[in-house]
Image (cartoon, rainbow, N blue to C red; front, top):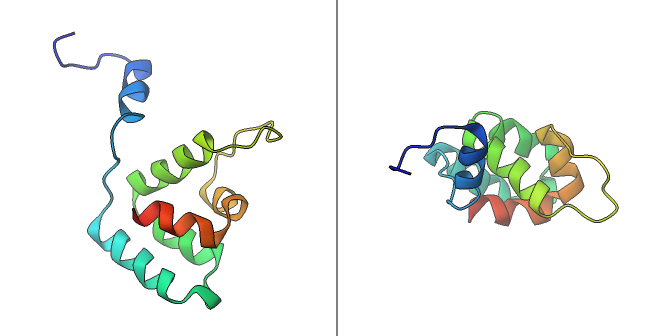
Amino acid sequence: MNGEINDAVAWLKRLKTVNIPVLGQTAKELAKLQQDEKNISARAITAVVLNDPFMAFKVLSYAKQNAGKRQVQDILQVEPTIIMMGTNDVLPQLIS
């Protein structure tokens, strides 16, 4: 392979091995949300995440990799994913 990725399967394999970058504004807004843990909501996190396509991909990828054995279906939307992961658990994973 000459460094080019020519199909979707190869792209997915590659994306699993790299740290997905996020927009600086997204990181700032998530850090601000994390400071107010008592009032944080899945909806607030989702509003930030949906403004950054790479962050949305990161959330869905993290959920897929950490799915429980009893989870029989993939979750394909950001807000239900954040709800299932829990707001207190998801933020540290997104900011790191």
